[in-house]
Image (cartoon, rainbow, N blue to C red; front, side, top):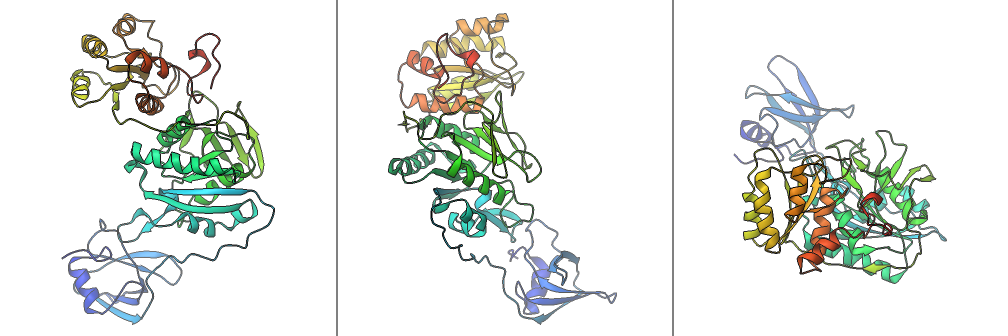
Length: 443
């Protein structure tokens, strides 16, 4: 029998026979004389078939094991759980204006009690109404551009997001732009926007949450409050990621868009700056700036959209065949970033394949699997031989950022020399100073 609000089999037959619907008050009576009274709740589809979930009078949900000898009675009708947007707080005059653009993710999601999972459900307007503190910081204008899980984003959606932000920036009507985004690929999008929106006049802040906004332990509200404060008042004007700085609800870290990685599956402080400090940390209304930055209102804003999907990221492992590179080339890819070992190595059996591909105009760049440090392929014979084969060492470019940059470069450059040159030319502080040629300043 098909699932109904998570219920199936004999238990679903019992519920329907009793004329019970989700939200009704019921009593579950068992043969041993025990009984449980509460509201019938949704349950996860993967939970045991014989468990009925009810909300007790004290507010706790419990699972009650039943069998066909038990009895379910409807005591009183109820209402199905539903999200109702509270009215927005009244606007205040004289506050900075901040634009919020929704793209989905956990921050704009709710628990689906049918499955126990999280699904996109709350709009940016809902978020604003649910966090009244925002009205004390800025006048917020919210819209929904996308409502997708971040793993479903492609270069097409990156282009849509970049264009939406550019249109806002061009009007010069807002003190900052916030993008609500799923955390799993937020560091890819932050890198993409860093290349597409160079030296923006105001902050462009990506913000997400590890736990949905309708959960008591959610980090959504504080992350959004911190992002709004920075969008309205921070002195820097860069693409950054705003997330919890630690486990406690006391600080928000702002990570440069080309220097950040999601490092934990579920921690609220999952995002870390790699080979760099966070750009700034906000505690209450006290902002501590930790690195050099492009100033708000500065010159040189450049809109450079466009990404190619003809690039790939390959993680080398012991015993891996170089045939994967040949396969990618045959499938129409124009370049690859390899996550090599340590200082930037792969098995020596890869060298002839790499050379043949590079000779054909295929780009091969080398990043490291190590999160910290930088590639240096001049220390060992393997590295030097890979360089002679035409591999481009990518210094301390994070592999994810290197992939996004290659997508951005391939959209612009046709010849292999041009691709190679652009990959090691700084655009958005994605390369550390030790990687830059003499006399070249970070972008």
